[in-house]
Length: 305
Ligand code: HEC
Image (cartoon, rainbow, N blue to C red; front, side, top):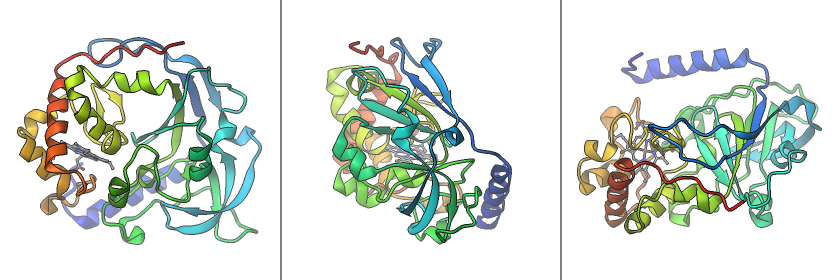
């Protein structure tokens, strides 16, 4: 469907939300990333030790929480994120939990780092109420731009669960980046938790040492929404396929203009925030990295254990 104006955008979004309401809580899949080459031309390696967890079967908690997406405090019933893998025991060596959301957002969480887990304190809500006594509703309202009052957030709808975090902080982002956007604001419903070794996971995106600086800009700013060769997030367009985006934004300067500014005539469909903190020099590094990473196969994922 081609969306041509603001009002049809909201009609489309509310239809989506209605469909989502009918669904029961979806199970969450846990797995360990298997060694191998991921991405185009190759079949991705099969998931290692996959396990499906029904969130309703876990001990339910009730908590009053501030939520960064709704921007207010409410009462939630659900499970602590870490309780989802309590019985799974992720293998030694894994240090990053990639949280996969149904809308393509991927948020890496250093789940063994006590300070990060304490600060983020992620909770997966199955129902919500504005009062402690209830009623608790499993319909989790979509995050609406106009309600949110945050110009750069698109409508996020939920299907069965929603992650609740109190502030938008993320350990891999700079303060300047966090001032412009938070990946937690974009998260849809949690569908999977993939355990990886962080160093080996990120090495996949580095075809050669000379473009590592550009990759670092991607890691801090873009990885939550974008992937390469179908590796990583897919909320925004893939950098390599079907169209190598460095050929679309065909110079460093054109890429910079896209990153730093929202193009208003596309406002009805533009869902990418303006990332004004990204400098021209950083956009140049990004462009060079995008060119290199989309013209080579992904580096093999080689965990140490
Ligand atoms: C919050 C999620 C999000 C983040 C963060 C994000 N993008 Fe995007 N991006 C999108 C979405 C969604 C689209 C699809 C088109 C649109 O809605 O604007 C997109 C489109 C694009 C495009 C193709 C469209 C065009 O007009 O050129 C490029 C190139 C791009 N992004 C680069 C980047 C780079 C580089 C970064 C990091 C500096 C980044 N994006 C960060 C969500 C994001």
